[in-house]
Length: 506
Image (tube, rainbow, N blue to C red; front, side, top):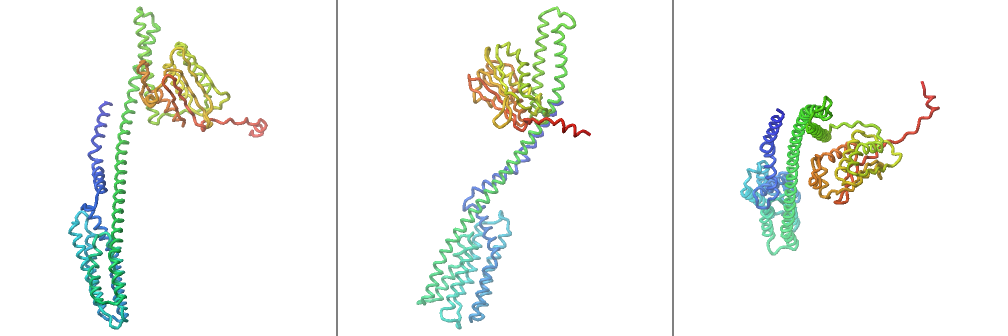
């Protein structure tokens, strides 16, 4: 039942993954990347530029009308008469055509804009607005001083050109379409020969037109860069959303897998341990002939083999459960003051018989008067026994193992187990530190083991806030170092004074 439940959960995960959750995000990524790669001439790109132009025209809708009104009333103050009011009304009417077109485009969805047609309509509207400025140089002011009114006309026209260059920078050709005819008209109005002052003003206007067109071109390039950076920002946002979606999906998978693993281990640990207890108990009774002689030595040997195999299987189950609890964060430390040197000495005594059987010498080197370590003694014993078991397993007969306990440079404490065995290749260190990982030497020598010892050690040391280091070279042995942080070293407190203790009694 457990297996079927896990399988159905996995199917649910697959059904929920790519088709439904990531299709919209993937589509947005492709759209953003296509938009980022756009160049001039691309319809989407041109639509963006036209929208920018329309937005600028709407935002600056009062600049040119304000200049027209200022010129009308200023000329009237100089004595130009009511003809300036008629020109102002006509110029405002022509300028209104551009604003109406810009307002319409600004409200239109970009996808519905026809770039070529919209650009053509804009240029026509700008040309029409230029007709209002064509009439302006033809006007006259009889009561004005000689040359005064033409200079005023040229200055106002120059200011209008500058304002238009700034507002219409997103639309190429808009400035020329608006003012090429007014400049020709003012040249015609000045006539030939013309005074030097009028010639200078006309020359200034002729020079200003390409100069302002050049400035408008550079402003257009700035707008292009603005679009590019905005597209890049949108692409990064979409990438972040994609990464978040993938991360959420991976987390969902991990949570489901962890729940399935927890359910499996919770069930299988009970299902396996219950028959194993019977196997271990009955095989030990049979091997020791507690209820009477077996009568056949072969059966007795079989009972011993069954007991050893059951014990090995039980150890394997315990290691898997320990690693699972560590990975799931459910391993609870029972912290207490621990004498690291004493625990190391006890563990060496426990494996002494195994080392003696292989003629391996264990050398113990402990610093004296080490303060207590606030840690889980059971976990430290497991760390030491795993390290010593590995060292004994891979150290050849006649070798030696050196275990050291002492201070670190930062004020913490460490345990070091070093052997003179065959060692581990540097490229295999990451393998042996992974769950169920075994090096080439362990595989060739067919040494028994699950590859869980070192990962369990890493997890237990990490729970203490420490670090685990493994140093090895081929044919030079290996050294495993478990380092505990200074925060876990307990400071010795001075004895409570006897006299003070007597005075503090109730």
